Image 1: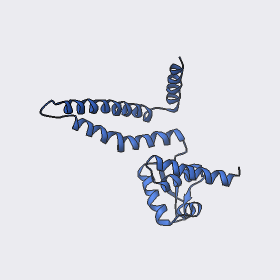
Image 2: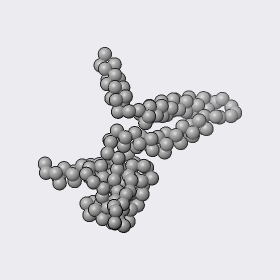
Image 3: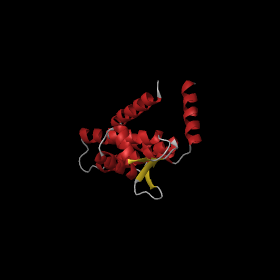
Image 4: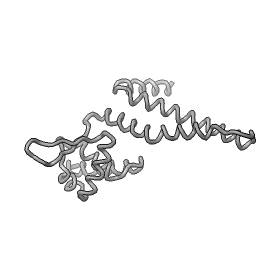
Amino acid sequence: MKYSDAKEEFIRTWGALGTSWGINKTVAQIFALLMISPHELSVEEIMQELQISRGNVSMNLRILIDWGLVYKTTRKGQRKEYFYCERDIWSISRKVAEVRKNREIVPVAKVLDSVSQIDGEETAEVKEFIRVMNELNDVVRTTDQALSHFINSDRGWVSRTVIEYLKKKKS
């Protein structure tokens, strides 16, 4: 496969993967392009590469900057801004996990805590509701703890933990 075909396929696939994770396709595609670029890219270069409008690029770069995944810089003597992302894939993964945890897991945990506090009659419906909420809360709390370990870990810890888990599964 030629580099240009591989690059196009990677960006297209990353965009599709992003949508399955609930991320805007263009956000994912811009991020994919920045991940594989050996240097910072201008808005114009991103527009040309992905065949999208300036407004689309600017809006989606803002999302990536807000997530802490993309940074902007300037070059001496130029007014143009350039954009780049973290180069360490493990750091990127931990940052994405942290953003998703804060946006998804933490709010759900708060809601589950709140709706589990039911006053009044202990009917069969109330007991079942509380049982289900407690089980969901256990899953959410376990996920939260696992993500916290991952976010605060280094690459070696993650690899060792996964390998140990897989070894235990085999025996």
